[in-house]
Length: 271
Image 1 (cartoon, rainbow, N blue to C red):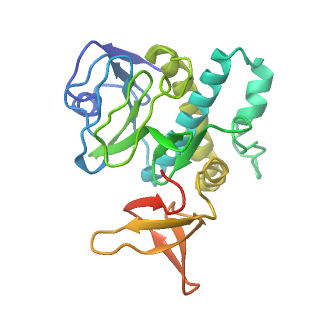
Image 2 (image 1 turned 90 degrees about the vertical axis):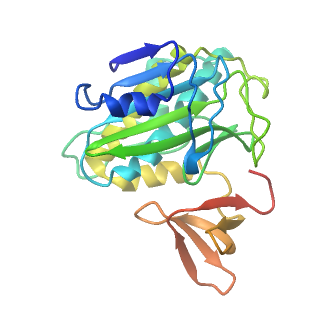
């Protein structure tokens, strides 16, 4: 297990880690019982309801570190899928769990032998570009990457017991969806292990297996979407991810457009 700091209250777990990035080791996690100044993407306020997961991890790495948003999303998806399945009594053996998540890659192997399929069948948890986790098609978690110098901090918020009601798009929580609510500490145990696994895969093999695994868990691939890009809102089909993680949209004229930043929404179903 990675090193962890558990706080009773903090303004922002991301800010706490960024302020201590030089002194703390790579892979250090911080979680808090209450967050008074949490934020999501584009400066949005993140709900700090008691019983929810609010945490961040410190990453010291070189390369295309923005791709770690997909690594974090995979880890979060698989951790939530496993912990909610286990709490329903569907506890896997260690061997079965390794097979489901993919064996750890062997450095130097020419071709990774990885099971990139979702962590379970009949998924209730899916991924939404660029970095949200959906539960039954509704957002239950978000991820925020922030960088200061050579330090990257990945903040993760999960609606376990409560969810905000004053959001632009509907939100939900595990409790509202009828799932047993794990403690934040139990979530961290699963999340830290899953993040270490997918980060190792990324560091060893690059983005290709991350891209494939993310798409296997994605919501709405092949469906019609709209992207909000400031002054324009192009529409088209969500056809996949580019090699750099950009969302690929097939426009009505048959051309393909890469979306590198923006808000994306499905047109035929809500998320």
